[in-house]
Length: 472
Ligand code: SF4
View 1: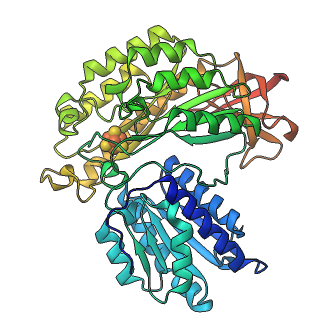
View 2 (view 1 turned 45 degrees about the vertical axis):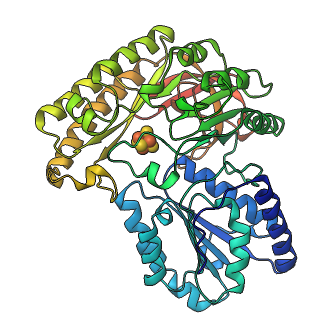
View 3 (view 1 turned 90 degrees about the vertical axis):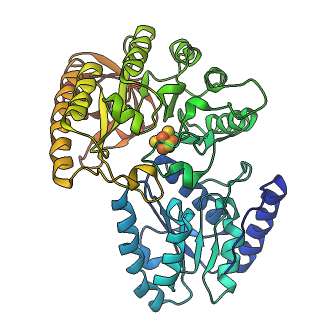
């Protein structure tokens, strides 16, 4: 077992990994090896899997959609919710038979769950057939770790305690069609009392503006029309850097890149949504008029216990300011139901804030205790049944509001970026408005990747139906 406590990451490390890639290339050349990656959790994780896939492709592995055909199976895990964690344990256990069928098959587990050392230990002890375990801070070292796993009879484990510097130039195999994700910063400094992210993703580290702009320039040249900037709290981009360059500066610079037509970003913490940023959003034509602004709760008592660092009044004033600058902006949010100590009055405050803001969409969650967070230690946990009932009440309210908001679009003509065929309906394409509304309509596959005008003919709570008016 290998355990690196802390090692600073440098461009030397970047070059070193390239050498391991070359080594692996020679080693597997002509063997026709295949990989399969299973990803749990958020867009950051999906994008990390794109990097793992990028490294594997460069080594010479090809992707397979079937686990049983893969010579290398990787689980990129998430620890934000208990359900996802339990699923990982079940699914890793099921890999035992695959390993028995082909002992040369490499099984690796990485991501946020592994960044918790007790979980990594549990996996190693319970599933000794796992060959490789690594965390989030050393994803770029995957080629070196894979080489060690290929040569070892034991599980190779490498979990770094701290995050080190940002590593650039990791090969990336993007799975998104017309739209690409670009991570602009890593980690989070906020320590919301229910959240495990700062414990597993480390403190905020912003990528250098020049590196981000160069990556987006290349994406534009490759034909991507839309980019989504990712970070746990993109609004605080740049605050850890010496130079005076913040998120609004970055948005304005990306807005100038030819070929990029839409800029999205997530996630935004309300306390960091500055006037400069609101102004940049309003003034930059390419910045989509959609803002995901997690509120989490409507009760000031609960917001304080969550360590969210704003009040409901602050949040509502912010929404007013945003809507004054961009009257047609769509707002979405995250809401947690059943945080410890939440009583009926607190929950009704959440219903009230949802009614006042009238979100275009919302992700609603039952509070799930995460070991290692202050909220999980509280004794006043809300009974499961009560949480479920409250969630159902909240969802009913949200669904009704979203339906009404979508009905406002009936008969209107919207510009839609065509993303691809509808998953379930033949001859139907799907795309999004700049306000992030999903629109389904009949059309030919040649339209994929173009911006077209669509008349809205039908509204549902979570999507719209339409018909093409004219091509781009
Ligand atoms: S802002 Fe809060 S909820 Fe979001 S990642 Fe940071 S700690 Fe977690």
